[in-house]
Structures are given as structure tokens and as C-alpha cells.
Amino acid sequence: MTLPAVTLTVNQVERTLAVPAQASLLTALRNDLELNSPKYGCGLGECGACTVLVDGVAARACVIPARGVAGRTVTTLEGLGSLADLHPVQQAFIEEQAAQCGYCLSGMIMMTVALLARNPDPTDDEIRRELSGNLCRCGTHLEILKAVRRAARLMRPVPAEAGKS
Image (cartoon, rainbow, N blue to C red; front, side, top):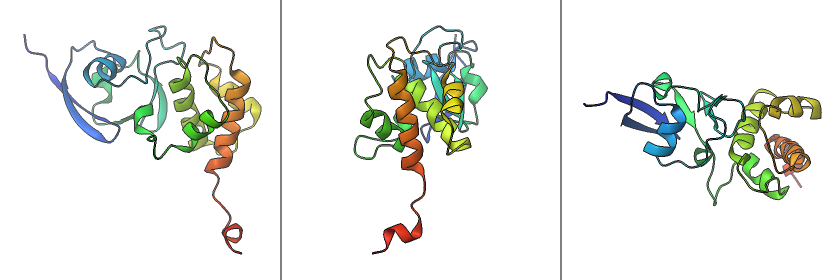
């Protein structure tokens, strides 16, 4: 039996995949596209380990059918930046040492990118609320909070006068 094809745009690359109708986006990303940043955690969309951006909005890849994102843009951690050119959120998480085991890290970073796109200067309470659905069992919550604050600072435009001497 031949599986029907679906075309997905992931990390700015269009790919056509043959996936079962019930296959989740997470399964397609990990198994078919070999992208390892979104993790399988709970399989219920509760823990945040599988968080990706769909059209710039944070989404739980484990509960979204792969076919449901055809024609939309999906971004994973691999699509944010590279070792040579880190996204400011990636840079902030590294600088604040906001990872221990790293299992939740991709989801935390993707949620932060979505938050800062909507709200470039969130309060600590807004950050906590936004990330409350992303579980971290290692206890790096304070470092994650600092990383989000640092990322917000890194992403602020530099005033024109600041660059003049």
C-alpha cells in the first residue's frame, strides 16, 4: 500500500513525505526528516518537549497531524540559527547556562521565541505564565528566566545614537 504524500515546509525547506494519515508532526520531523530537537515527552501536548513554531506560533508537534501543517511554515530549533550564527534566544540560553539535561531545552527556546515575537519586553510573571506549560525536571527554572530576560535585551533594537561616537 502506497502512503499518500504531504508537502511540508520545515526550516525554510519544502519537503514531500509519504506519511500515514494519523502520523503526528513530531513523528514526521524526527523519523522522516531526522530533526532531533523536538522531543517526545508525554505524547499528549502537556509537557512542551515537542514544541515547534507553526507560522511563528508555538505548537505541540506531538498532537498535530503532519498533514495538518501542509502549506504552513514549521520551524524547529535547527531552523533558528547555527553554531556560527546563533539566534539571540539560543545565545542567551547558552550565556545563562539555562540547560542541565537538555530534554526540555528545545521546547523552552521555541516558546521563548514565540513569546518575544509577540511581547518583546515581558515581565517575569508573563515569562513564567508563558513557560508554565513547558516542564523542566532538572530545576533550571531560574536560569531559564534569566535567559529569557537576556534574550529580550539582545533582541531589542540598538538606538541610533548608541552606535555613534
